Amino acid sequence: MPSLIDIRRRIRSVKNTQQITKAMKMVSAAKLRRAQDRTIAARPYSTLLRKVLGNVAAAVAGDEHAAENPLLARRAEQRRRQRPGGRV
Image (cartoon, rainbow, N blue to C red; front, side, top):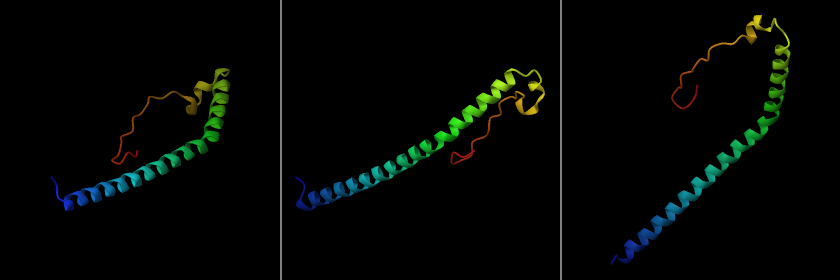
């Protein structure tokens, strides 16, 4: 049977682990909230970009000279090398 000191040490250890877990949950909740806010803030831009690209696609579909424009030419996809840390 563990001694009283061992039991107290174990209780203290469990409390410390609970504090650390609670802090980690708070940090992850804050990060998630920030990511959600950024996503919601980007919605107007994505909507406008979708409309602009739709208009460009509609204009190109009716123009036979559109293929001559270098900005509208189809190109091969280029893979970018991933840097350490997840940045491109």
